[in-house]
Image (tube, rainbow, N blue to C red; front, side, top):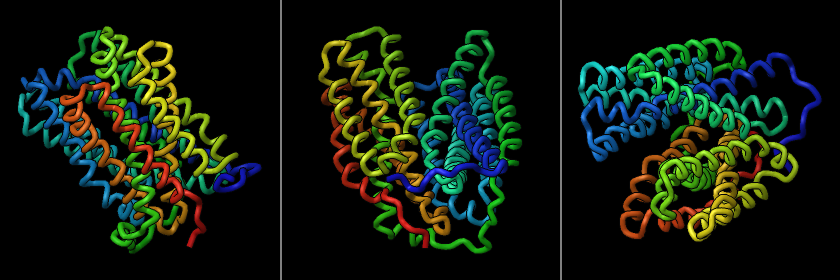
Length: 393
């Protein structure tokens, strides 16, 4: 069975908080994809090659990994709303600084500082909104976290579409990112006013202890494997289709769009099956679906099979990360430290996954390299047992 039974009704304040958390996820996604839409301008403005750009973009992951381990303690002390607001300020400011560095100053070091700040803001924002989402989910009495993550996916689509339009109009990077960032920041400040009035802990503790908990680490391993399944599509699916099947670039982009759509659909439908069948059975099914989908993409050879594989891969990758956040937050008293640990482990996939797959792709080809991701679904399936709901202590 699912974690808890569905409630008949919910207070208006709880429903407002649910909407606010959904907005926080969507705004986070929109901000991220807006920046991604201007990465080519970042490269040209700083006169970088692909290698230099890759190192520069790595600063975002570095900033996130620096912020993630302490974000749970900050939420425990100051509350999720305060951390989301501060993180949004840091993320928007860092993005704006990087844009100005490329558009106006032409300084790689200044851009790097901005991207580290942006990454730190992204990491803290991620932990805080997941903690708030887990608390809303707990009080509602039914699974809803995957739909918050679907909101992030929808936000990325909207941000990317807006980016396409702005680029087509010839607007330079700095005005685009500064104005959009200011709008997102204003919306975040308004949305977080209706977050739940959770009393912060005066002296949060247990962050270090959470790193020694077998269940928390196992949930982190599961999240990491599913994060690789998601992140590998973000980074390599388009190139894999182009290199492996010799298709036009737009076809590869279409394949990625299909993946994102399937993953979003999986997150929208996920709460229904999770509440009906429970976490472990659903995650076993999605891990298997993701592995089968990946193998169909690699070995399908004909487009109908490859398309089915992309859809299966996307839906299979959809639930691991959000369910992992819910599992880490099962005990409200220790949620902050545990979500911080699980997030840190999961984000390691976004730091180490792309270069490792890229290196393997240089040896065996971009498409065949994706088979490694299918293999990772085996330890993910074993670790799924750790996500079973536990009683709060």
